[in-house]
Image (cartoon, rainbow, N blue to C red; front, top):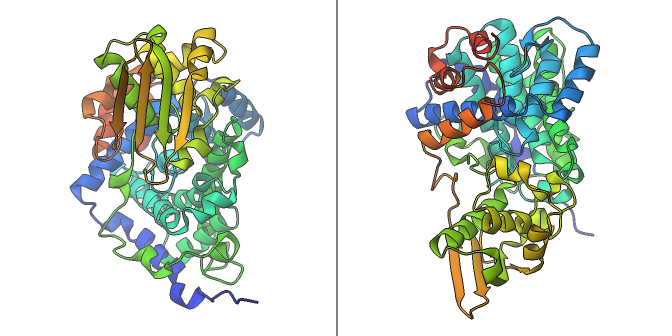
Length: 454
């Protein structure tokens, strides 16, 4: 019987290295490009949470949270309600993900800001920290979760763990530790209490429970740092200890690489901001279909057959040809492609206004075939259409809109922000957008609330 190599020596003091990095974040200046990416990610998170303020599932979460009581310490984004910090993080984490419009670190399939900002902002508002502290907290939380995600992907994800939830718990705790100003010792205990709460199943992805995963992750991170601040201890080597996080979730191939260049090279620059409210692996398909429809002025009646070639993981994650609910439609590249051809758009209004059972959409989806090509990357797509007049047209996308190689412009991000903010009255959308983009200028992050509370 083959023996499993003991990786623990290679990961010695890994938790301590993260704890030192986290505990010194307030004193470390971010590179300008990292600060800018952090501000844009924060603005995108705020927009997504605002846009979901009136959502049915967010309202349900708020009813439960409000009934639990607790001191009114932090805001529910886009509403007048205030909750205790644990439940504010829970509700806001759910809201930021519910529309499937939030950011994505494609190499790890983690939504970086989801739980990190929800935890940091709830704590930051209650402690009245500055925007500079919030900036450091968010960048640090993203770095911790994405470095862990990069080390464990794809084995961790393929096992069935929802990485945004499992590893986001440590990211949320890292961000919270920066907000509270915990030292390295208390931060290590906070990471341990986050690690022991880490969970979340991929089976929940085509349901609203995938957003609950993220909200619960944020609240778990808040609890971890509050307990650590109060003097509650945990295993201080929670990542590398026997029966610790790596023993349970799977050992990375190169544990020492996880903290290489920590504090000098950041993964925030690799984060994608979505132009479409759907699974990020669908975006190159949408780009290709929109380009074909616009370049050749195609009508659905012109199309006899569509062949969509993508990475096998895209089919695994978004290969539902005929989704039967709206949320499953946001995880179907067949449905998204049909929207692109029929509606000439795949924006929020189109996704929300389209019935997945619409005969025109269903008919066009039925003309589509998916081909898995392992030579492609998940950010790539090839679309070939055969027309009724005998012509064949093709479009390839290597870098989809919103990706690091083709990022949203500030104007595009602003348009997205204002569209989502307009769903909340009487929000001051433009002023709030500017405040998010210049986060470091805020003396007190609780001042953000005044932009949506009259």
